[in-house]
Amino acid sequence: MIPYGKHNVKLSEALRVAWQIRFHSLTQGSKINEFERLVAEYVGANYAVAVSSATAGLHIAMLALELPQNSKVITSPISFVASSNSILYAGHHPLFVDIDAQTLNLDLDLVEKQVHLQDEVRAIIPVHFAGLPCDMSKISQIAKASGVRVIEDAAHALGATYENGQKVGSCSFSDMTVFSFHPVKSITTGEGGMVTTNDYELYKKLMRLRSHGINKLDDEFRNPILSTTAGVANPWYYEMIELGFNFRLTEIQAVLGISQMKRLDSFIARRAKLVKKYQDLMKNSSKVSSAQKSSNTGSANHIFPIRINFSSSSLSRNKLMALLKEGGISSQVHYIPIPAQPFYQQLGYNISEIPNAFSYYEEALTIPLFPSLKGRDQRKIIRLLEDLV
Ligand SMILES: *Cc1c(COP(=O)(O)O)cnc(C)c1O
Image (cartoon, rainbow, N blue to C red):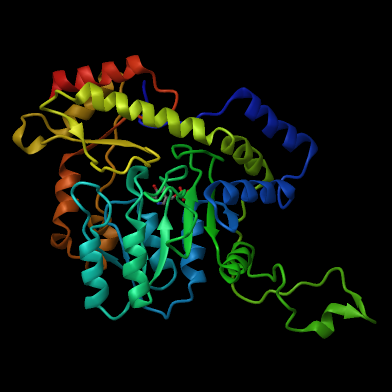
């Protein structure tokens, strides 16, 4: 069975993890710092904070902005539910703006309109869908003009490059960027995530929120008198100064992350090559085509969604997925528009406001893409699709 996405871990990497478990620290040691430094240097940001998942990262990034309660935060309806859930965790309201039918990223004209229309819009969480970077220079202009903050959901986009040549995560256009290390993403630590930023105060706040809200770095004690005895520091003393969480990554995971970072560029290059091959194979097809169209060549190519006009075909998506499965090929749909989920429906979201998201959803199918996918598998996948559709 060919999965739609798959992690890539060598035996030598697994042995490093085993070595760490047998002989070194399991949590709160030096490997976390090393992993954070590697990611920060790779993306070109000043700071990186490792967390237990991208969901945890989005959660504390939202909290770190300290927006007034009940702020509106714009995000994409074509994303994983974690993007908008993070807004709700922090006590705010997601505002779903429709996608652009070509790039499948947020439609920035609509974003600009909503920012001007509604006073309470105080942040934007753009999602780099399938690893294709949003036009961050434009998002940053819109945001700066209205004092709106920006958190990039880059769960798909570690290794992607903006049009100006900088890496996604450099935070030149945003306050913070959040990455995921779930097994289907660019690199993996099992579960895991990372938040990058250039702002020292945000960095400190993220460090505190990740670990119970306890003082970090150069935070001063609120009760310095309790922190010493006769002028000597009390070694047991710490202060919790806000309500935080345990969202830490383990040393075991960090060891895998460090090793995976060294392979990131080769993963991204391989994904680009596979996408090019898919495009060549589909060049003359009238039935299947790549769903995402852009002149930007910096995508991390996290997934490969195609579009099929099921409504004008006698073949349903359900049937097609079953037939592909019989042929040994897994497929998926990314994503059901978030506001169509029962929980969001209960909150009263109106799904007629996002027609592009729905017409994409009706036609979407994700076919396999991961670094160890073979060229011959790709030929088999496209041939079978052409036969079936
Ligand atoms: C995977 C994903 C997340 C959540 O990542 P986890 O590390 O699994 O918490 C958030 N946003 C998007 C767009 C994702 O694809």
